[in-house]
Length: 280
Image 1: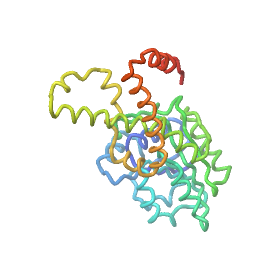
Image 2: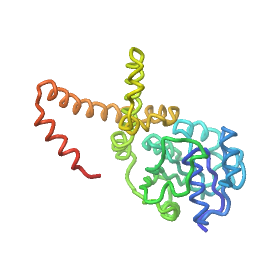
Image 3: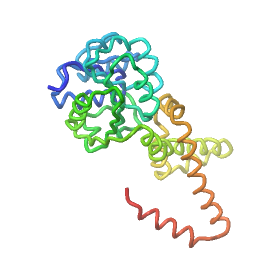
């Protein structure tokens, strides 16, 4: 048994899926849950995902604390609970930005907290505990970042738990994480939202735009159904990297636009062949 009591703070899609996956490992004796949204918490309870509801002060009982909330709200919760966290507790999060949260925990000089920045590269445009799946993380990469105050023994312990849910731990630094994710995750989200915004604007003058939406547009804009409140926090925390990613994307669009204006279809074709053959 790796942990006695885990508290999941935030019983949405990721928090509930983690609880389901952890239960299957049988490596945690007791999983409790806290959420300001009572409906989410009730669903998680009814599904048997968490063993009992918790108050935020129950952080003091846990030897594993998982923040599965929007990234900006972690600061608010910590302000009221930091003194309740035991020194032998592992604390982690699941946020899509890492540099600011790592700096926050590294700043706690007078309290040793075994914080591990976490980011599972798994999810869905659907939110809420009803969409949770125990196998959401199987075969998926799971970013782990060790804070300055985290003991290696506790880092290794949590890494073992992640391998138990059949995720693939990837250990990198926070700065690199945020730079890369701005391109591979945050930019696609921006594009998805604003493709839909373009459609919304055009359909104001011609309703036929909506009638002619096909599967290609729907597939490309699937991410636009994602939780806006979660993404606003991400855009705030990774603003500069996202702006750089947008600038790089705009540069590529300008090249395509120029070639199209000048009827340079061979150049466009060469680009498309390279793109279609690129593997990832």
